[in-house]
Amino acid sequence: MVSRTHRSVVARDAAQRSIDNKLMILKAWAENGIPTSRDSDGRELLDHHDLKVLEFFPTSVRQFKLWDGSQNSPSIVESLPKFTSTGNDTLSKRPQSVELVLKALAAIRARAEVQRLSGRPARLRELEARIRALESTLKTRITEIREQQRAVRQLVLERDSLSTKLERERNEFERVFSSLSEQLHLEKARCAELTAALSKVAPLVSARSPSIGS
Image (cartoon, rainbow, N blue to C red; front, top):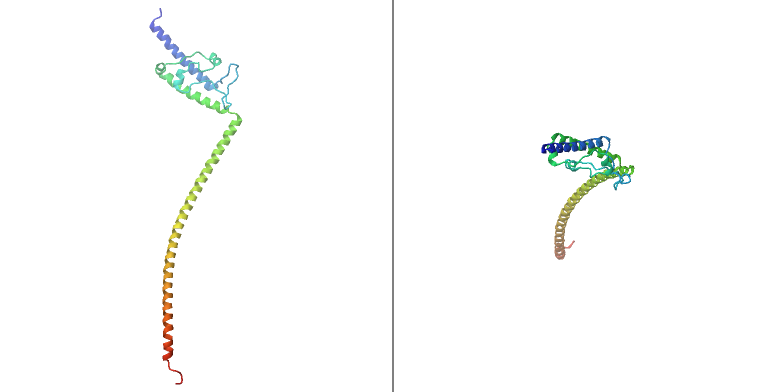
């Protein structure tokens, strides 16, 4: 009869072997490339950008623990060493394995990024370059528009200042014009009075003056 201790040792070794196999797979994929997913006929699968779909690979510790091969294509799983999901405590009790997992995850993410970039069709790369150029042009235009808006705001301030000054000068002109008009009116009235008075006095002056030779 198999003892409980023996079963525990067997389970522990199996768990470690599964972790090691996962690490070995990730290391191989990081060095040699992540395989692409294929359909039942062996044709590579493409996404909606016409890029090759990569086989599932964990990108976090949580995904590493849940990874058991069911996320991958059957044809890929057949070529891989056996592995199963890993319990939370199983990995946490192995700090050296945790460190190796973190390094492997970083390496596989970097490899995936390289493959995605290199797998982009030339047309897509051209469109992306054009988009970057348009974005750069747009940023320049936005800067120019902001500068134009600043200049317009400055002109509006100057216009408002000139309008205020013009209104003050108009009010002053109307005040001075009104005052001068009133003075002119008074002067005309006085001139009319003097003219009337002179017309009355002139006959009297003429009558009292002695005749020449009398």
